[in-house]
Image: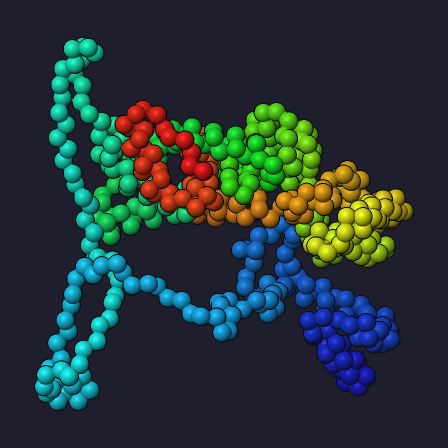
Length: 469
């Protein structure tokens, strides 16, 4: 190839070799004729196939690092601001052991040294190299009760009846698995290698089933508190139960989180949680089964709506009047969120601007849009017309469903690590213990001490104490 053809080839390769194509570059290709346009389209198509563009449903973890777009600079630097007083770990309350280091020769040249002229101290905290389990033998007296007509003995509160493993270890392992997401194999590795506590996976799971059965009362109390919340967030994610598709539902408020695992993702599953009409504000995404619930008020997640706009512009048809529609919807949502944050505006001005938001929403819905994606979102806006700006009337209601997404995130991590549950009983235990440990964390309680003390009281009295507030 030589002459004009070679120059055209070089120009085209230079034009489309970059990461993007500007309007001026596209016009330059078009000016070279039909052959140049066809060649450029074929080259761009080949590049796109080579990059293997992901679909909107592709999980981020399945994308290679080089294929992910850069996130830009961090908005806020980590750590404390410049000039803020520093902080470090405090000194321990007591010293367990004193160690004196000899200094007879210089560590640099080996010269023999005399008596030290000064000393300094340094405190180091560490864990023991080997932590053997504590084996206790309990002597339990038995006596004949003439009133009861049977042999009686005092309860042993350190372990469940018939168990050879204490309640502290039971609570610790359950917290590691259901509270922190540590896999069973990893827990067994820590017990065997560092704690020198020999325990099988089957024995561990059987212990957790017993613990979940005892804490069932707390689990139900958490669910009832969630149903009584003034503002409740709900979300769901995929799960597996004995290899079959299932869903993990999450219902959360500032001081309570309740999980439920169900084979159904529709309204029947929601009806098993909402036993009657919900008297508060329910914050959800646009999943259709939520629409069938009887609630006092609803708020749909506006962030989901903005994400849908981005998805259309990245992967779907956004031609025609889509840009005008998306621009108006983004401005509408943005103005509503800014109105929520405006603390200076008076009540009359607030009501006027809120009314203006609804007028703009009605105009957007009544518009004659031709783009199919715009028509789809118009149907959604019409269906949720009364649920878009509920957060403006309730100071404690946010315009998004971030709380539910944050609370369901630990369950998603557990699902990736342990591949959900192998049985229905395991799913029941999973939901109950996750709810208990997550709620205790939200309330600032030490899960180990709280549950260990509750088990001791249960063994002593046969009744579980009330759920800590």
